[in-house]
Image 1 (cartoon, rainbow, N blue to C red):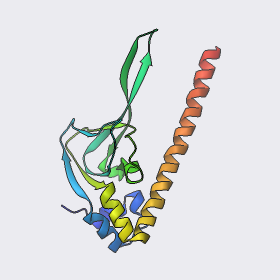
Image 2 (cartoon, helix red, strand yellow):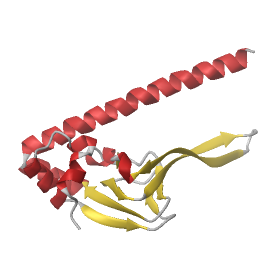
Image 3 (cartoon, rainbow, N blue to C red):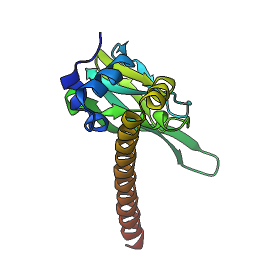
Image 4 (tube, rainbow, N blue to C red):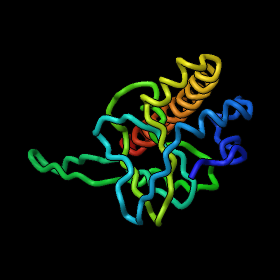
Length: 168
């Protein structure tokens, strides 16, 4: 099952690509089936691939460690977002750029099909087709920059709210 060009055209990081380039992308994508509740990405594990949600829904979680006393630490998870196929998003995209640890956990909420692109396949394609590689990499950089900016804004809001709460 190879993704259709019209489907790929809706994915942000592929929006600058022409049809022939989208066909090259489609050729390096592997469909992966994830039953409801199955782990897609595990926080803290090294990543080597990115996913595009073709069908279904996934939930993104972040592990939180909370201190309740001198030696009482408890771990919990915070749901960050639920993503659906119709959102046309990618997850784990940082793995195309770096082999860093995953920053969150992702699980399938319902039976889902995701297209996987491995770092190795992407880099091979980018070296073979430098213009395509540059277009996707620039879009990845834009996406990461947008997410970083939003994270910074969230931190400012949270620290401001905490400061106000503590001063009362």
